Length: 591
Image 1 (tube, one colour):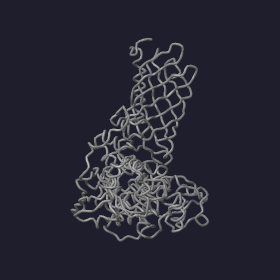
Image 2: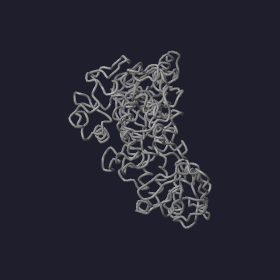
Image 3: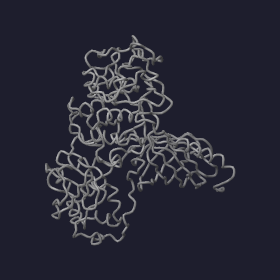
Image 4: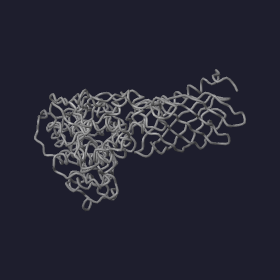
């Protein structure tokens, strides 16, 4: 076998790393100058206000009245039945309800075009129709420089500004034809409705959103407030916010509906309706936060959150899930995954052994108090737990502590009680972790890695795809069928065995470092969060030469809902030649 790192391979290596770097580079989005700014280069505008029948974007902004091809204020379709919004469409309940209230309307051809992006002017018009809010400020006499007095949405824009929903950009411009990002719409609704983050730590967003790190800094508190108020609706994956992606007409209908529910003007979506599973942040007519079940008891709420995976597993191991699904009510001080991770790894491993079940029950019941106690009912003093020993509550303004644990999210309402997320595990005063039994196994693995777990980049999967050859002489350098896998090992690392299958299959065995997901771009009006990764390993050519060489790899995972992941990977294998290929595939998530 030739040298793994020959001078002649340098160009192919730089090509592979260059493609990888281009693939995984996250979009850099500058923080806006005002609470509702977006990128400086506006995207191609969609229709204005209610859409034109020919679907051609309107370029001029100096229109005194809506063009003749715009849909009238009342729905142009018969009733509220749109040909492209079937009864099984995810946002159908939101769309139909708002169309019936004349908040939104369809096109003259009988369609609604739910995936079409919404402009800032259109969203201002929707706000004007949806809410009756008193002004809190006054627009200057000249108004925005890019919104002439005879502009079709001038009145709606003025009202959205004066009622505190929307703001302009530096230079006294509004950019009415610019597509509005989802996070900007959330900021608008929380600002106009006066919804504030009262006490929750911004870190709680990691409980609900896999792409929480993509939320712009200016919008973090607004998103916390919207989540607490059940305004946020995420499709197709309830845990993916896509904050910087363009708001679609379906998205707009969903969050406006939830805002009207918050105001008491509409009833929450029933828990047995499919749309309820996409509502984030507590309960919405029975749909729990961040989950897909229609039940919203304490156990289901914890299981639906990616911050309580350890707690959920321990409740099952202790046999307490049935207890905490009973009517109760209960108050649960729930340690996050980070809280459990702060325990010694060996102690956490031993807690899950059958020999320590009684100890595990003792610890978990020490986190549960009988009754449903809101933060206003929790006062400084002791509360007796189901374990028997009391916990010490300290209430100081908006801050709550339980023993030495800080409450980072209060008043998460469940059907049978209330949950408080805390940052430390509570231990009964007469309990010592050092007294846990070691277990009967001879090998003590010290709480090692878990094969097949989810990483911060997403879930583990197995799938198929195709390989595009770039250079070299093995099957990796040709167009061939591919099998792809991701097996999470720790929070940051994955094992990704794959194979490019041709006449002489090439087996790829890399270990990758998985980066935090980033929300970038949009496709068909919907943004996607990408999870970059980069790594190295071994490549094996199963041909006659049986060549084995080093492997450099990198790429992205793109979650497509809760069940599927799109993968794109660049592989450079140093075999007899330097072989470079790009695999693209779809994986089925199993963890």
